[in-house]
Structures are given as C-alpha cells and as structure tokens.
Length: 300
Image (cartoon, rainbow, N blue to C red; front, side):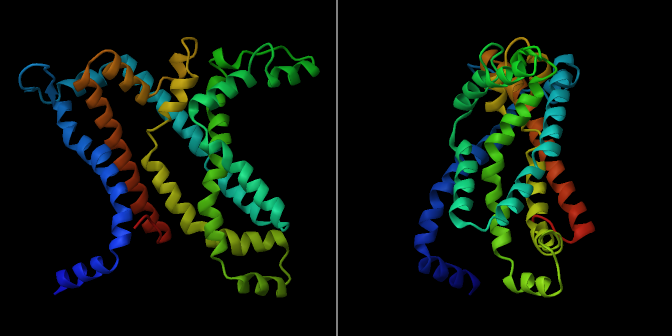
C-alpha cells in the first residue's frame, strides 16, 4: 500500500523527478562509482592483468612518509585558518546587508559581492598575482606611498597562506551570504515590531532577534563545512603555488594529484584520498552528534 502511494505521488510529481535526474546522474558518476573503486587503496595496480591485494601496505608507506606528514600539517593549518577567518565573514556580511534600507543600493552590494564566485580560479589567480606584483601591483604601490619596502607576496613563505585566505574570502564571502539572507527573510516582521515596542535599538534587534533565528542555519553550514575540512582548495592552491612556497601550501589534494596523475602511483594516491575522505566523514558525524547533544540542532 505504501509503495503504491509512493508510485502514485511520483507519477503526480514526475516533472520534479525529471529535473532531479541530472543531479542524481552527476552524484552517481562522480561520487558513488569512485567510492566503489576505493578498493584500489588495498591493491597493487597493474596495467595488464588483475590487481593484487596487499592489505594496508600503501597506508603503512603513507603514514611513514615525511612528505605526507608535511602535507597533512599544511592541510590542517590552511583549513583551520579558513574556518577561523572566513566562516564568520558571510554571517557578518549578511547582517550588514540586512540593515541596508535603500533597495537599489542593497541589490547593488549583493550583486557585486556575488560576482567573484563566478570567476574560475585561473582568472582569480591572475588577478591576485597582478595585484600583488612586487613592482607594479596595487598593494606595493600603496606601500610605496608610506615609504614601506616592496614585498613579493607570491614567493614569501610568511605571507602566501594569507594570500590563500584573503583570495578565498574575496571569492566566496558574498555568495555564501545567500543562505543566511534567506534565513533572515524567514523571520516574522512581528518579532521586530515587538522588539521596537519594547525599546530595542537596531543593534539589540540584530542581537536578540536576527542572530538567534539564524543559528540553525549557521550550525548546519558549520557542520557541512567541517565535512570538507580536509579539502583545503585544490584549484586555488594549484593556481597560486610555485616552487618558492610549495613547502608551506602543498596540501593533500595537490599531493594526491602529483603522486597519482604525474607519477602514476594510482594505488598510493587512492590510499591518501581514502584517508582524507574518512577524516571528513568522522568530522561531520562527530560534529553533528556533539551539536545535537549541546544545542538540539544538527544536519538531520
């Protein structure tokens, strides 16, 4: 009976299921099938003939490699910096946009903040490399006005991680406000009216009405972001890295690309990739259960 009702509902909403089909195909081809092939991490790859099972051999080599430890440390540092310095920015930006009362100006700010998201990292890397050029770059021109020495940010181990942080912030902050602005728009105007009658200032309305109403969305986005904690940004790092700073921004994704695609060590690269996926799964599950225990809110 339940199956018949489900099929009847699917026939009724067949247009929605057709629209869902491309997304399902994408996830099956690029996410489900690769999971099935993760068994390669426990095998020795052979071009001709069947692969042979070797157990945890590749993981033992991986965890004993000094290069892997350096790459893992770089990934953790860069991801932690992104979580600390980038995650709060869309929340603050959405609160500021919500306070803009002049409609056209508000739409202009939103549109301008969204635009960088639609640029590829190839274009963004070109913009930032030109902007930080030690001779003609805008940053060093401004430093020159204050008689400060010119800096080559792109080859400086001290500054390159901050270049990653600020370029990612510039690209994603505006786009990430969409979820928070949607959460704000769901708040009943009656709550603001009641707060005004009680004498609440604009800042107090934001603190006691807007922020609490956004918290479930903030928690959900935070948990989902933790699931991608080990994805420190392949496209970004790949386009901004050079030999001078490779030792401080070489991350797991670029390491897997180098040993897997360039060196042909497919099984070893799969082991590194599987390790990264397991860490992400553990992080998202543990954060979800901790959040449910403390706040009653989680991903599901």
